[in-house]
Image 1: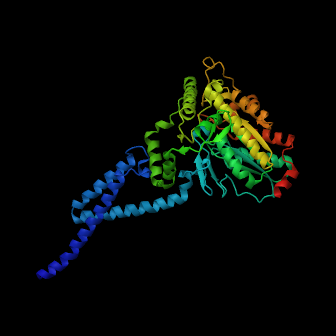
Image 2: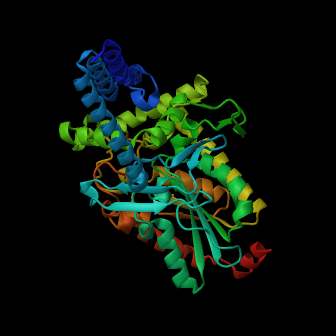
Image 3: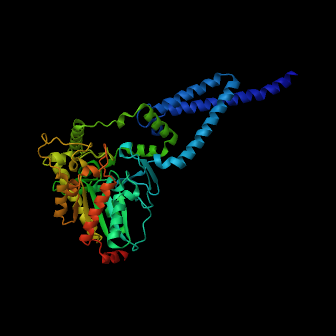
Length: 478
């Protein structure tokens, strides 16, 4: 073979080798850059993560093949491309099949800090201690849990505002308080009833007030119910930083409130992070254990939890009211209202009680402006109403001012001063031996029995007080 023929044959081979090595080097460089990136979807905001370490190691190994013989490099590149295509296809399928199980269902909101995302689905599973129940539900187009709402005038409409006790992320839809109330009211009235679940986990009465101001004119309900969880709703008023009390103890909006940037980062990560990575992380936790899931039990552990809640409550008050910190640092974790419960005459307790009074008064005025009857339901904490519950226990020798009913008593007094109807669940739950009405372990939410019992009590009150007037329905149809 002539020299020019050999050179013409070698030229495509050299080009192929160069192309293979360039593609290999590009993939290697991309993996290394991703491994060193501080992008929150990769790093999780926790420093150099195991996922980044994996990407960096893979990038270095792939880069090493650039110096291997062409046959090795070609096989490695073929294998790498095949794996990438397989993983991409798997991610696409998993997002369609398992997305609701991993995605967050909340989005930031300028007015109420955050809210449910309309149209999303939610899949969650309870821990074994509470039955390992798999729960699947949807958020409708208006941002409420449940099916789409009926047209105005088709039913007697009741809207229920509240926090996680009302949203019921831990319950099947048919077991939630709103669905059980719907069933009880429909049975008692013989009419079609629609109970709107306006609960959002982590919400405080301040956020619920703002939702009422914008939603009551649109929903035009026959009755509005505000469910206040006595266990942590006092503290929400300080954590959320939406309002302040003036020197005259009047309520004013806080125009300077800002969210910690970590919330936007975490919510973005929850939507962008690959499902495969989430599955690998969960598998890793099951394999090596997750220290964050360790939950100490026993009297000492319960008392330490309450003590920690008290310290947090006082710190949050000092940071916001005394030091003027306007950054919201916590949205979801709501500790027990230990300062109001254990030290009811303390400065932080008196401030929160006064703010709660102003919020409830504003709620009354908001509902009255729309001619909507308003009912309050007071939900006690299992720390107070159960003889023993692992979420916490008060050392009565150390805190002699503590009374089990203090939190619900204060809320009821505020409602009475505002001449508002109220259903205080403390006594019936205590008489029922409330330990059987709440979830087990470190979860302070009510179980299906607790929700149904509460719904029956509230339904009885509504009927006895004739709060669902037929002529009221005619008014809202107009």
